Amino acid sequence: MPNQFVTSLQCLKCGKTYPADNKFTCQFCGDEGILDVQYDYDLIKSILKSQIANRSYEMWRYRELLPIEDSAKIPHLKIGWTPVYETEKLARYIGIRKLYIKDDGRNPTNSFKDRASAIGVLKAIEFGFDKIACASTGNAASSLAGLSAAVGLQSYIFVPERAPEPKVTQLLIFGANVFRVKGTYEQAFELSKKSCEKFGWYSRNSGTNPYLVEGKKTAGLEIAENFGNDLPDWVVVSVGDGCTIGGIGKGLQEMKKLGFIERIPKLLGVQAEGAKPVYDAYISGKDLIPSDTNTIADSIAVGTPRNWRRAIKQIRASNGTMITVSDEEILEAMRLTARLAAVFGEPAGVAGVAGLKKAIQNKIIKPDETVVVVITGNGLKDIQSAKVAAGKEYVISPDIDSVAKIIE
Ligand SMILES: *Cc1c(COP(=O)(O)O)cnc(C)c1O
Ligand SMILES: [Zn+2]
Image (cartoon, rainbow, N blue to C red):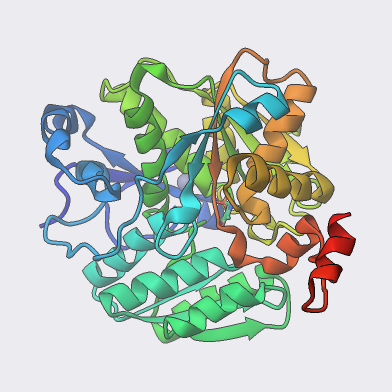
C-alpha cells in the first residue's frame, strides 16, 4: 500500500508533475530537473496533530510526511530527534543572546546523513532492489553502509581518493563493497551513476534521488516541534550539495502549513571559501557554475552540487542568506564548539558555528537574536583535521618531574 498522503513528484525547475514511483529526474529538464515529493497536507493535518503525541521520539514520528509505504519495515536503529543544547558559554563568547546546538553527530553512524539513508534503503526495498549504491565524500556512504546492514541490502560505494580514513573504515566494517576512485567526488559520482545503470542497482545519490531529501527534512520538522512558537530567529546549516539546508527549509515550511509554527526562521547557509559554487549562484542570481574544491571540510567539498536550486529557493523563502568561511575559521570553530559547548564536530559539522560567528561580525545576525546551529557530523570522522585544530599532547617520561616541568 503506497503512502496515501503522497500526491506526486514535481520538477523543481519546470514544475511538471509525475506519479510518485521509481523516477529520478524530470524528462524535460534532465539532470537539472530534480523532483520534489508533494503531499496532501489537508489530509495530513487532520491526522498528524492528534497522533504525534503517542509516537516515539525519532524521525518516523512524522510518518505521514515521509514517502514510505504503510507496510515498510522500519530499521531498528534510532535515527533523528537528536539532542538540542543551549550553550551559554559559546553564546557569550561569540556574542549572541541565545545559541542552541542540534547535535546530529548523535545519529547511528554519526552524521546527519542517516536521515536520508534510512529513506533510501526503504525505497530500494519497496522498488524490489537487493543492491544499492552511492558516491559520497564519506558520510552518505558510511550511513548507507550502516543502514544497508540494518535492513539486509548489499551496498556498493564509490568514494573519492581523499575520503578520510575513519569514514572508509566505517564502510568496510558494515560490509559495504567499497571502490576508492582515483579522482574527485565528481568523478566518483559519475562512475556510481553509470554503475547503477549498468548493473541495475538502486541509486542513493542524494542530489538526484527525489526521496532522500524527505529524510533530511525531518531535522526541520524536529526543530519546529521542539521549539514551537519559541522558534529561534535563525537556523544555521553547512551547505555542500544543498540537500540538507533545502530539506530543513522544506520541513519548516511544512510545519507552518500544518499549524505547528506560525513563522519560518531565517536560514543561514554556510559554505567553505574553497568550495562555494552555491554561494556564488546565490549572490549572482544566475545558474550555478561548477567550481574546484579546496577545503578541509571534505563533507561540503562539492564542486558540482545537484540540489543548489532547492537550497537557494528555501534560503530566499525564509528571508535568510549565505556566507563563506575559511579553513582557519572552521578549525577555530572546531575548538570553540568542543571547548565551550563540549560537542565535537567534524569540519563540515561545525562550519555552521564558524558561519554564525562571521555573520555576527558582519552584522548579518544581531546580538539580540536567537540561533540554532545544526552540527551535521561527529569529529571522530576526521581525526586528522581535529588534530590540526587541537594541537599536540605532551610526551613525557613516566616520572613526576617530567609532569612538574610542564606544569611549572
Ligand atoms: C553532507 C554533509 C553536509 C552538507 O549536506 P548537503 O546536502 O551536501 O548540502 C554537511 N555536513 C556534513 C557533515 C555532511 O556529511
Ligand atoms: Zn522539469
